[in-house]
Length: 115
Ligand SMILES: [Zn+2]
Image: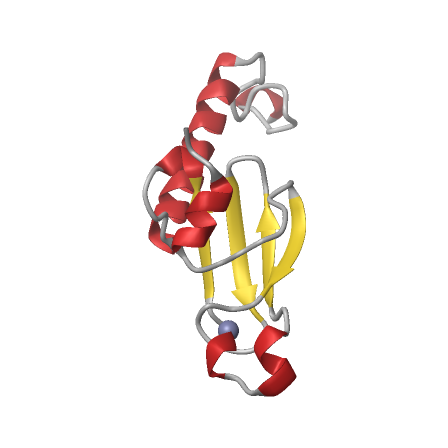
């Protein structure tokens, strides 16, 4: 059973809730190094979606993401390949749909129109 909260804790991110939406937490990369009240400042913005989470620290700039569907430790590279995959999937369904191919009823001039 994959649990986005557990995956975030592996990264040192502790959220009070992992409901989809925007959350804030202390940053495992920089909060511990800070002083006084800053140490508990919730500088890390975490956006939770159903199967993924993205975060970015407002203090040190640390960013990262997790995608439960992609398995372990999705990196930015994994995310871009996911995007590519989704794009390919989208174009496949376009081909199967009743969308005309280019030059077919889309106002592209044909030889017949000349002369
Ligand atoms: Zn930070």
